[in-house]
Length: 391
Image 1 (spheres, rainbow, N blue to C red):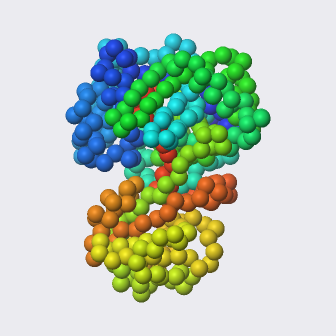
Image 2 (tube, rainbow, N blue to C red):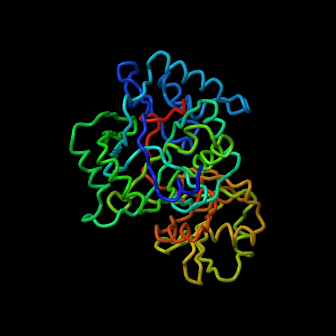
Image 3 (cartoon, rainbow, N blue to C red):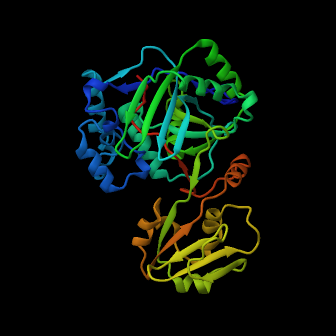
C-alpha cells in the first residue's frame, strides 16, 4: 500500500454481499451481534435458531479445534454462495445503514475503508489482544471475507457544510433497499448511494477528516496484518467498515467492567497508592470513579489529582501494578451484573465509568493507546446484513 493512498480518509464503494430474503426464514433471523459481545448462551441460542445464522461463521461452537476451527464455516459460506443463499450486489455503492432500537439510532455509511498503517487518519484508541487479532485473521483467511464491519466515528461539523451527512439523510428519505427486524427488537434499513457525482463529493469531503476506531480494533489490526502478508493482492488494502458522523448521529459510549483474579478488598484498602481517595461503599455520582466489590462489600476510588486521563487507563497504569495482581488473567464484561456475579473474596469485580469522548479523542490524536477493552461504543452494526468477499 502506498503512503499516499492512505494519507487521507477514504471509504470506497463496494459490491456488497447479502442474504436473499426468499432463501432464508427472515433476513433478521440470520444476523448476529458482533463476536466480542456474544456470551455463550447467546451463541447457543443463535446457532440453534437458524441454520443460516451468521454466528455459525463468526464464532462456531468448537473453539478447541485450533487453526482448523474456521474450515467448516468457510465451507458453509461457499455452499451458501453456490446455492444462491447469499448474492453479490450488481453495482458498487456506499450503503447507508440505519438501526433503531428503543430510541437509540445508529446511522452511517458502509463501504471499503482504505487502511492507514501510519495512523494518520484512521486512529485507534485502545490496545489489542494478540490472540484475538490472530483469531479474526484466521477467520478472514479461511472465509476470504470481511464478515463484520468495524465501526468508525468522525466529526462531521456543522449542518451548513456537511455534504456527506446530508447525502446520508437524503438517501434515508427514499425507499430502503433492504429491511430487517431482529430478535432484540431492532429495526434495520439499508439504502444505496451509487450516483458517481454524489460519491465523488463524499470522497472529497471525507478526505478532509480523521476517523476514530470506535469498535473493531482487533478486526482492524487483522486487516493490517492481512495486507502486510499479501501486499500485492487486490482487496487487502481495504477492509469492511461503517463510518458515522458523530456530530449528526452521535454514538453512545459505555464502560467495560473487569473481574480481577487475586484482587481482594484488603489489598485495595492497604495498597492503593497516594493520589487516590478510598471511600466506603459503592458511591454514586462521583465522576471518574472506580467501584470494587468482592460480592458482599464495596469500596469506591477517586483520583484526587484531577481527571484528564481516562480512569480505565489509570486502573491499568497505576492501580493494578500497585495492587500486585497480574493483568493477563483479567476478564471483561459489558454488563455489570455479569462481573458482579463472578465476584468473590479472592476475585474482585471492578466497575468502571465510561471515558468521556473528549478524553478518547485527545488520547487518539496524541497517539496514546488506552488499555484493551477500554470502551464500548454503540449501537454496534448487526453482522450479516452486508459483508465483503475478496474473491
